[in-house]
Image (cartoon, rainbow, N blue to C red; front, side):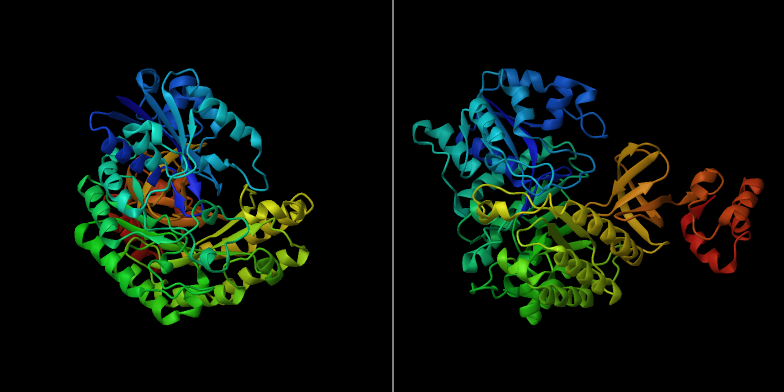
Amino acid sequence: MIVAIIDGYTDEPAGLGVPPYLGIYPRYAYGAIKKARKDARVFYLTIDDLRFTFEGEQGIKTKNKTPNVAKAGKILEKADVIVYIGGLHTPGKYLSAVPSQVEEVAGFIKSFRGFKILGGPAFMGSAHEGGTRISSRELMLAQNVFDHIVYGDLEAFLYDFLTNPKDATPFRFRSYLELRDYAILGAEVVKQFPDYPEFVIVEIESQRGCPKAAGIGGCSFCTEPVRYKTIEDRPIEDIVKEVEILYNLGVKHFRIGRQSCIFSYMAKPDSRVPIPNPEAIEKLFKGIRAVAPKIKTLHVDNANPAIIANYPKESIRIAKALIEYGTPGNVVAFGLETADPKVARLNNLNSTPEETYEAVKILNKVGAKRGYNGMPLLLPGINILFGLPGETKKTYELTYEFLKKILDDGLLIRRINIRQVVVFPGTPLWNMREKIKTEKHKKLIHHYKYKIRHEIDYPMLKRLVPVGTILGEVRAEVFDNGLTYGRQIGSYPLIVGIPKEIELNKLYDVVIVGHGFRSITGIPIPINVNRESSKVLGYLPGLGKKKIIKILAQRPFENKEKFLKLLDPREREFYKKITKI
């Protein structure tokens, strides 16, 4: 039996599967197939493999190099089963991969004979931008092209379908006990991932469902409690074992994600704010470090700031564990969404502005120190969502003033993620959709987004990574319009624009020389002052046109000391570290 898994890339509230991230769904699907049919030949393909195969270079929606598999057509021709995994619920901007939609993949696969199965969050539809409502057109198209649409867990359906097809139901959910074998057997699919082994970061599931939703209901817009009605924590030993297997396969980058709140892992339920369990989190991350001692990235994802604010002692213990066993540049995303208390109440949001501010302060005290890779150890990020029911002009003003207070008080946040709401069937927001004023507030949204980017993001970035900061191991990913774009591997890494073409898919240490609104400018070091272009030298701090003219006139320098004599004494120590002859 031949099975083709097509990864259309997934992005949802509690999980990411957009390269360089390898999400949970392809791995679990692969493991379920292997457990059901040991003789199965399972091929992992990305949507970019299909784009290149059927549309050529013009079909690739990224600026990256050609995908690693260019014979997807031959695999699909022979495939007995074709599994498509997709679903985009929290659309963002992506550097070197663009998620697919059902319409796109349907055009590629509809002519092939293989039994077609759709899995992942795609059954609810996808949105490539905010301010939209999911139409029935995509879902109807899926029903016409796919033999089965899986509404439960894809891996559960695949195992049932391949062992006893008559009893297979697309609505079944698996337990963590059942998942154990799928996760272990599925780990080896990482070897077929384009960014393997050096650059892949694997998303590891730790929890499903939303603890807050179990108590007082979920946020109005969120699809997580729609899909998972109960809370289930994955056993520590299962997480550690999966990390161990992947680590032994050569993976060095991990995010303990796929959860709505890492601080809620194995927490004690409460009506509004779960009581955190620092002992469990310490045991989990200590266990991971024991089996993966030379790990390069160990990050997390979401956190509910209300937990940190209401249980500071326990939360500080958790934060310290994430720092001790994790790696610098770690970020926990806070879902504030709005600083307007009326809108927050109407949409049943996670936390108040006061709680979020307190949580930002607590994490700054613990995690703002700079780590060995140039980034702070552990910082919060803030999620803002425009377009929620109940918004007025005052809503945007309150949110802006909240973010401005964080800036004015000297605190650090890694990033502000501003999205427009997407309305999915089954969420509480679906029943409130007539109250959404996105079109009416279009100018307001644009104005405040611009204002936040210019007046808060820009000075915050300058504080986060000042000129002269050295960021370690930045991967050069794409080259476009005279710039190479790269980033460190991890949760919410900064995009670094490098003002020249350099070899892609290599790691560079870069010195920061400038700032944008959401990205930074950096130069790979050490800088060869005898060979570097005048354009790149012009970006370096403290030189200026006159010094650059002198440098160009006196090149080549015999040694570094002769170059350093051209500089002011206060600049020499800095340039001694970042230049070479």
